[in-house]
Length: 365
Image 1 (cartoon, helix red, strand yellow):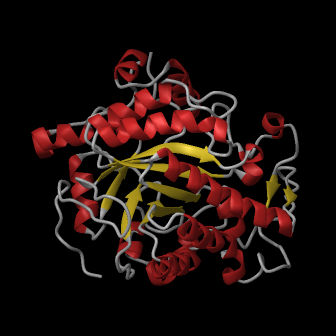
Image 2 (cartoon, rainbow, N blue to C red):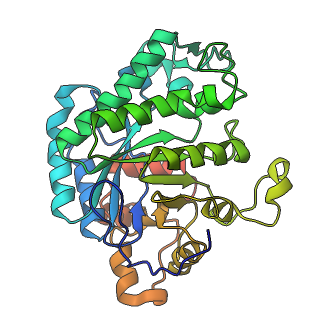
């Protein structure tokens, strides 16, 4: 499709749920701020509410695990038990009252689940000696599909406008998609149609159980065994399935494909490859090193619908308001940021320490 001229403050409509008031989306950002049982502390609603009042058009939670044994890190939000509902209800209310579109990201870490965190071996699409993960049985795959669906139902009951399925970054959905890791011989392995069956059964199940809920999917086109032609095929099928948002996690929205994937994609950056695919009424978001207002406008000029902001949204809770006030004259902070600055931007001490440990040079002295 040809690029369309949009400004960052044009509204975005969806087939399900309310419209975004602008084209700024808060990426789902790991922050380890929840309690050990998956219930929300006060820190996560505070952090997210600041982004909602800072005028992000769509505000998404951190990855929320749909199973205890799918937990990927300490302090992860959960949507697998009704005891977690009261915090989710409060969070959805706070976000919705601030005028943002509210999403929960549904997640299962698969073989990236630390065994010492869940007290058993992790699970994956196939046995994985490198991580010690075992293959899910066919019955367990079906139960995991249902647990994603149940997570969507809880999210809708809590009052969220939508959910996003985390199919990127080497987590469980991605593990099923991978021809390198998924060596199953049943109908969940082999061909791309079979390897993507897990994802599409979740999509179909969420649509059936929550017909009014907006549905997004996050994908990676590289790394973790992902191949651009296969992800492009999955992308087109997701459009045909009527998902509302495809959130492409690109690490750098303007980078060229890795060398082994150049081929027919030579001369195009990752954003262009996916923006040019037909997408009907599905909206496309891209994430990866979008920092300055000029970066936002550039991806919109390439035909993208939504700019997905991560690290710069940590540095500025009110990034959209700042851009609206100063336009291209707004110069966002760059790391390192002091703990005091990050605290002013709504990060808890736990979140600040997570950023210090996980992203070298992000937190200064």
